[in-house]
Length: 284
Image (cartoon, rainbow, N blue to C red):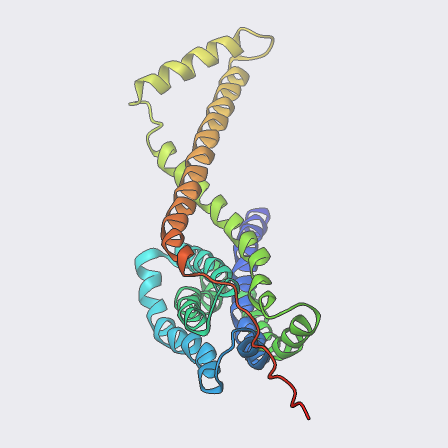
């Protein structure tokens, strides 16, 4: 029973993260849909152009969601969700920085394309992380999220545009996205840890010499030889985890560098959006 409980608790954390990501993806549909007029006014868009802000997002989602099963088999559920959450966060920032209706439509299509997989992976997580009766409870939680998110969307979207402005319809996704990216960083650390640990075998002579030296040093202190060997193994684990964390942060900085490389050519295209001037009043 303790082992089963421990395994369930380990499964609960990624399940919560995936549910949170799926909630944000579903919520974003209705948040933007309820404020299209304000968004179109802020970007000086014509009435027939405003609808494409939502249409581009939905078309991209419809294309990607059926492919999510195949993408899950290729990249695994965890890595597909990680890439989708990161893409959704970056494109949310780009949508908030959009300078005209054309750039907004492009960024919304990218947001739907990159963030769509969070929705099916949320449903998949109920089968991936749980079994037996717990799977039924997890499915009920996911079903509740799928019902509540579209209901809250118009209320939250209207409140954001009335209190702040249309940019915050997208900036509101950044904090949850960064939190999800923190989970991604932890997953990347685990990936590097497993890769390093795979090579820590008796055939690795430098590691074996270091472990023998640490065991002898700790064994010379008050205590048993077994305690010395255990302390040496703990030290080796800490060194491995530190190296894995360093590699994970290096991956993050490489991703940031790539984002800057992509964004830099777009800077000259940005311009400040100026509200149209009111026509002069008739003079009599």
